[in-house]
Length: 229
Image (cartoon, rainbow, N blue to C red; front, side, top):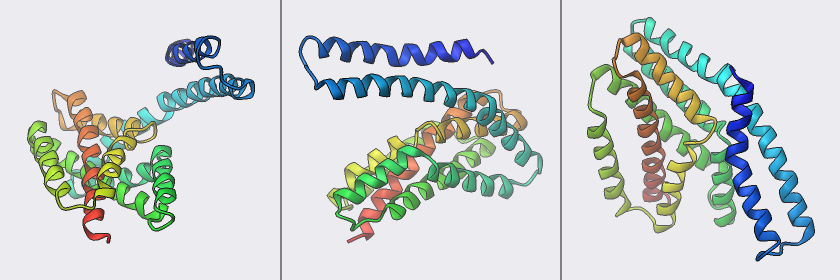
């Protein structure tokens, strides 16, 4: 792994917004000095954190995800693949920082009526079910577009019956599950599975797994809105 390459990736990602805010500070925005200093310090911490995180992903998450995917397929039993796909999808979503932030915000907006643990559990359950479904798709060779069209059609149908408060939250839930914890592991898991199944499109199947996984939490939160009164 090229650490210099990782550092440059982070610098190219963070420096432009840092420069833009700095320019605005001295031209239009005129933020308080304390806030601007905190922003610069935060930018440095973000870059350091991202460098460490990306190194960890490339050293640990991606190789382990691929090995886990290939190992469970080698057992030769479909139910084992689906079961561990479900468990992995649930666990990595619970650990996803973006999901925790969403749960905290929903808890605050609802004045505690909707608990953080409920939102996290519902979102994680949605991801887990659709990760298992995505793995099943790989084995049954079902075209990805069929499941995506069907999934989003179901989303818009259920949206007609859910509480309005849950509608926006549901689509946010789909977004937060594409965060830095969930995507690398699920993507690597899909590549590991397809590398053993002999698929010629392992990368496509891996990305399809992530796409389907993001539909699950949307449906889960919409269903919560239907039954949660």
